[in-house]
Length: 435
Image 1 (cartoon, rainbow, N blue to C red):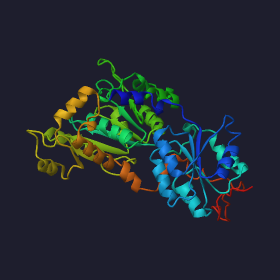
Image 2: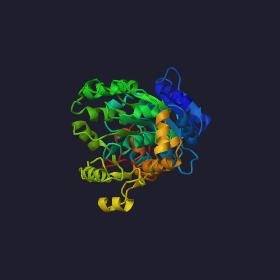
Image 3: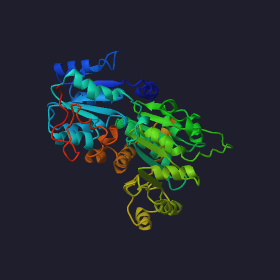
Image 4: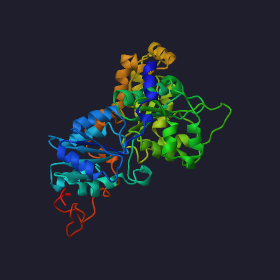
């Protein structure tokens, strides 16, 4: 597996992102796009001949650009196809769409419902492309825009030490990044004794400590340099500080760090052991989904109830996901006893797997690569925490992570865009690709 880690360390996350990649279905559209972007990109634009499916396939294999243009002409289900495209893009990508449909309902569903930056229908002319598409290249830094919702934050917390939370966090992040091909990050908040770097064969560094103690220094470039690639679409942010060194986080540092990370990654999995410190409370509140991992013991049940009673924040749409780990461990409580105390069944149950986990830890590899039962359990956990299948079914809003503030993508009145009616709302037709 050393080859896989080598691929990650020199993989797509370390390569510069292109400002624009475009896919056009026909020669006339390709020519109009090249000419329209000529002034904004004097070095040449990367416009390719291809469909929406070609764009999805390409974005699975190469770094996503800052601006992506796709041609949905001839697509039987363009909205569903754009949802599939969103699954392989980083959250801060702006999406431009070209198509054949002229109706305002389609325009609104793209720009308001899905968060597409702008839509033009054919035939295109360079002047309109330059006016409505090429201007999107200006101010591409996501820090200048406050409307990006960004990636999903998942905290994994053990009810007590030894419950296996770190192992599950590592394998969940690996599943999302390597198997589901989502841009994912594993954040290990145990700055003294974290295990994420060991389990992934990575190297801890001082960047996380500096980020929590000096949040004013944080920017996109700092985060890009701080994150260590451990797979083609998986990054790691971990530390290993001296045991005698106290490391209090500056108030607001966690929120600042997460805001920057969410602009780059679809999923941020946080290995978050409980500590009576503000950092734990800040991250627990900022999470979109909390995962509590318990083993079949009375102390773990007690702490699970206490953690479960922690009030939900506005970011959390559902209760914590409960994972019963080491379910059939010798000497442990029976599952019926666990359910009786919790007054509910655990969402995910993982059997006791000491041998494959120990072997994987010794090799510095995620255990799900060698252990089928764990692989199945992690896939179930990924779905429970709002991952692949659940998000794919929740159509509205997923592509909204790719767009700017809702409404800012609507073109100005009188500029070859959707006209406004007497009440000030959008009119009957979207932007027409003719002068």
